[in-house]
Length: 229
Length: 229
Image (tube, rainbow over all chains, first blue to last red; front, side, top):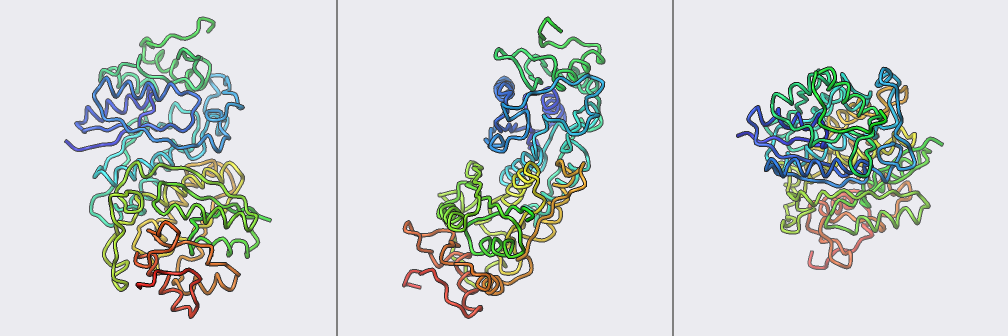
């Protein structure tokens, strides 16, 4: 079996990507990043998911909260409540973490280079998304080129491929695909600002896109949202 | 004054780059990385250099030693003693740290994005070098493109530039340039494997390239090497 590294955030998208990679027959290793995100639950869910599936899990600490500037890493900034129809239309939102996927993919590529892995899977998606520049296909293409010029891959026949199986899928398609592959979405977390007990807020961009996705997929989200919604 | 971020390793090259950026009139901030390198002296020298010049200094911890695979981060691997004429000719050496400049530049770019900085200076050089893929101009070009597609720069008029003023300079040229600009090379460290008191080994690639550079520049290296050489 060919090895592959899956970037796993504990969210709906990356859980689906993990299932897709396994369905394609890859021998998967998951990598998660502790970057000082306020939604620490991501890390617990990623680890629990890997444990339950018997998948090796590498966790890396990168102090992006040292920089601030994002509502996901700076406790002084609030996660906004944007009307559903406006998500992804107002420019780059405050939940964007500068350089996040670029930094993650650089580190993932270094790991791959060292472990003889040539396939990375990442759940970037530019359809039902918040408008993050590091989720767009042009960025992924440039990043792939950079890795293959700036690492050992440059001098070898093998090259790194970054797979983005969700790139052109809407959220409902992603959910349908995952359900078909047996993903337990009850193990995932999507919310940018969950309650201390893990209950999603229901109001952030990520919650809204997720809930709309389940509605459109005609399926019930196994997560429970606050009753006030 | 226009701000610029300088990647500072405490070595001869980056100290020269710092002086070049200041000479060009930039208001400089230096960034150094603690990536688990065996030559910890780099970090002390970087900090001391910035203190003595009154330059703001940001230090970031990235656990690349968690990966191993390089003689610079894995204490189990020895720094080799390569004959001077063979340096840079034997493929990518064991002192290469996978993904290093890609990871550093990703993080530096995120910092710039947040702080309104559009200029990064890095001391990469592909003339008197050890054969590292992440020092080649094609990599720097691809990296620049990636940053400008994968960050806030993608949606703004301002774009990031990565300056590599040493790109086509030999080591002797670099030293001559630095001396003209008043760089105190006695404050720098170049060795991959210094003695506990900071004395350079004199035998690693980096020491050999440095010493040849001073010889060719007709100047005396202010560092003292072991007498057995």
